[in-house]
Structure formats: C-alpha cells, structure tokens
Length: 563
Image (cartoon, rainbow, N blue to C red; front, side):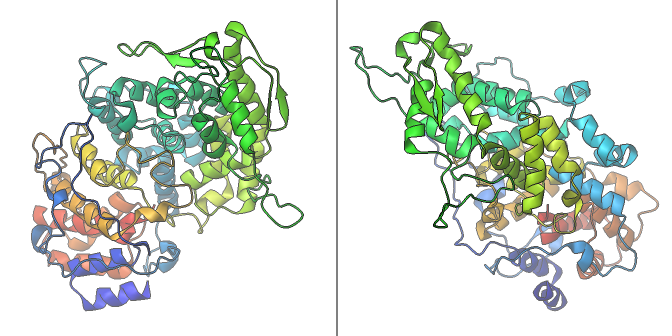
C-alpha cells in the first residue's frame, strides 16, 4: 500500500489507477488470452463482439484520462483491510460495510435495493429470508429473461446462459444464485463436451434445486444427471463387453466423485487439517481400489433420448451386480432393476466418510467467506454439516453467521472472479441488459458459466488469486470502458444512466459525488489518497462525462477488485 500511495502522489490519475491495479496482480506468468478459436460445435464469434476486448490496452482511456504504460507483475501479498488503511476523518458506517460484505459474498454484490433490504431487515433476518428462496417472489427478474422460443434451440447454450446471467444480475434470490454458481464451479460440466444447451440448462436447474437442500440428494441427482453422465464418461458405462464378458468400467466419474466432489484426496480432521500417519505423511482419503469399486457400483446408466433430453435411464444388463468394498464398507450388490439403487448405496458410504464434512465445509467457506479460514471456523461449520446429514441450508447459515465471517481478516480481503467483477459493477450501477455483453465479457476472461476449462473448474478453492493476471487486468479495464460508454449493438447491450446523479441537488460538488460513487460501487471506504485524486479529476465540474470517467477509474482500481 505504501508503494501505491507513492504512485498516487507522483503520477496522473489514470496512470495511478493502473499502477494501483498492478500492485494487486498475481505474481505468476501472465496468461495470454487472445481471440477465441471456436470449437467445431461453436459458432464463430464476430469480430464486433466485445469490441475493445480484442484491442491492446488503449493509450487514451475514457473521457480524457491518459495513462502511461501497462500493468507490471509484482509480488502478491495479503490484501490489507481498507477499514484500517483509510485515513478518513469520518469513520465509515459499519452496518453499511457489513451489508455490502454480505451481499458480495452471499450474492453478486450490492444493488441499491438489495443494500436497503439488508439494512432494513438486518443481516441475520436477511440471511434467513434468502435461505428460503421458494418464499421469495422473483417474477420481476423472470420477466427480464431473454426469450427462448424453443427449449431445444441449437445455439450452444447461448440463450440459457443469458437466463443465468440475468438471474445473477437481477434475481432477488441472490444467495440461491450464488450457491448455484458455487456448485457448478465445484462439480462442473462443460458445453464444450456436451454440445447442447438443454442438458446444460437441466444440469444448472438441478444444482439450483439442490443448492440449499441436501448434499446427499445433490450427489445422487448429480450421478444420474445426463450432462454429467456425458461429461465424465459414465454414459453407457458397462461392466460387460458385447459378448457378455466382464470388463473394467470407465473410472472417470468415480474418481472425480471422490477426489473433487465429496471426500477430497486427503483424509481430514474435522477442522480441515490433514490426518498424518506414524511417519508424518498425509493419509489418503481413498485408494485406487476404492475408485475401481465405485465405478463398478455406478455402471448401468445411459441416455436414450438425445432429442428431448428427458433424462437418464438404467439398464441392468450393463450393471455389475456383484458385492463391492468401498471406503472400508461392504456394499451388497443388487441385481435387476434394483441395481439402480447402488447410487444411493455409494452416496450413503460417502456421507459417512470422515473427510466429507470438513472437505465440503471448507470449500464452502472458501467460496463464501475466506480462502484461508482458521481450523476453528472449518470445525464449527463441519460439525453442523455432519450433525445435519449434509443439510446445506444449515451449513450455509453457519458460515454466514459465524463471527469469523465479519472479522477484519475476512471483510474485503479476497479477490473477485471475473463474473463477480462484471455482475457486481452492473448491479451497483443498475445496468440494464439481457446479458449479451456479459456473455462475451465472460468468454474473453475464460469465465463463461457453461464453459469451465476442465473438471478442475475455473480455479481451485483457495487459488482465486491466480485469476488476477496482467492480461486479465487489461480485459477488466476494457470491460469497464465498454460498460460506461453505453454503446450497444447486437453483441453489446449493457446500459446505465447517471441522470439521477445529475438531477440530485445534493450532488453538485465533486466531493459529494465521489463519496456517493464510493458507496454505490464499493459499499466500503475509498482510500483517502485515492478519493483525493478522484476529486481532483473532476476539476471542480460535475458533468456526465466526468461522472462516467470517475466510475471507470473506480472500476479499474484495486478498491473494486477487493471482494
């Protein structure tokens, strides 16, 4: 931060913004993200899509703010809590700070209406309200959905992804939408392999339905889900060849079910720390034999209907009916149609495994609260998960109401993912869109909802900082430019107005406008020196051009990157 303050004092406002951003960039080799190379099943994206995203960093930034050079890579260090850093004569409203924190972690950032909702209800009451999404009227959001005349439309999932983006932007069920994305990141499937939007949308809906329900039921539904059957090769996975001879089944899904989705690779204590053997080595949570036996138990599932995508089916002729030993437990083999019930048998064994509760609980804490939770935080949440048999509503409540969730070590100390960055900016500015811009922005930052790069998702839990690279910073800056310039075409449709600011008689002076924008965009205090630089940028005049330029400067600052 001292480096950042020094840069503020010695450079122009725009150059300062870039230098500040560089101070929080990951200390890893930059990942070059060039123009997309469409897969054979994906239509080419026109060069006009995303517009500036194909450009290099412009020398002249919006509304006359000139920057010099490009961001450099510096050491990544823990982000200090700005509450302690802000040299403000007037302390920031702590209720507003915590409300903004809750909306960023349990949703996609504060909109003016949601901020008021939290402040009016109180944090715990808002959490309880969000934990019962069926009781929330979301018809206004649904009325915004991009029209999908045919659910089976062959557009590589474009239309359905616009629906999901709209939910992130406008849904009153913010926690449910955040949890749906978290589970998709944890147990991903990709349209790059599936090829069709309908099964991807059905998978998304399955996650949404289970997002705050039972983890047990989610694993069962996941195992039978058509998109997952295709993605991890459990579709037509048979224990026998065409002549009826026993053959080893494909182990891909069985392996990821254990390694990534449920127990994790290491045997864990309830506080999330690894269990060590007598020689001090970490004990594994499962063996290769456990993977093979699990694969045998999950044979027999297939998809027959590739036209309507009506679901998966079970055929006993592909299923291995023999007994299995999984994670130290004997699973009595089932023959005939009852072989389908071995999905529930496998999940029963997984739910009883000592690593499942701490592994899933720590992952959820890392997604909702902090990537570096204390062992005590993990143990408190894992205890709730275990005692409730994987009740996700109770588990998430335990995370969001724990004292550590609102501690100085957690509030505004994490990074934002590209989706959180884009959607958060749009919610704060009350942007109007059907999602087209966000579809392309997320593509170019490799965070498109339906297109995770691998089974390891967009990033592994605890490694969110790896998303913050020099190339990503350039893309995020260009996104901010595209957002504020209000240009629209077939591929860019995000618009917002600053007229309310211009019409407000209380916002006639630059200082008041900067304070207002800080509240709207950050729900947190601006660093005092950054605030001073922003006030100077106005040059004593509050105009639409200056307001939009100030919004760009805040969106491209490290203040906005903090989650």
